[in-house]
Image (cartoon, one colour):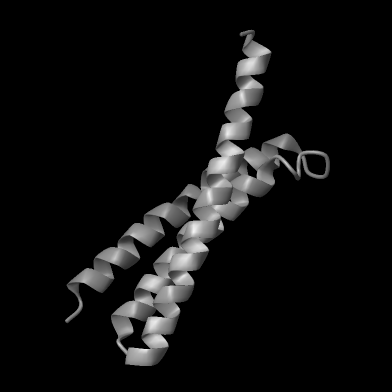
Length: 101
């Protein structure tokens, strides 16, 4: 394979995996939110927020390639790399949920 084909394959892989992250995180977040509404356990609300952060990250990375014609590439790269902070935030919310009694 040529390097251009490998780059296109890598972009497609990143886009589809990010769509999967968004869909799974949105589903798990919805289940966690419903569990919080049913049981009123504040930890489930925190977990739902964490899944929301993961889902938002997946959505940002998925939309990156669709927005290339409309936004400068540097802006999109900055947005993608900055959205990794959502992963950090999601992990921290799970830690908070685990340590709450």
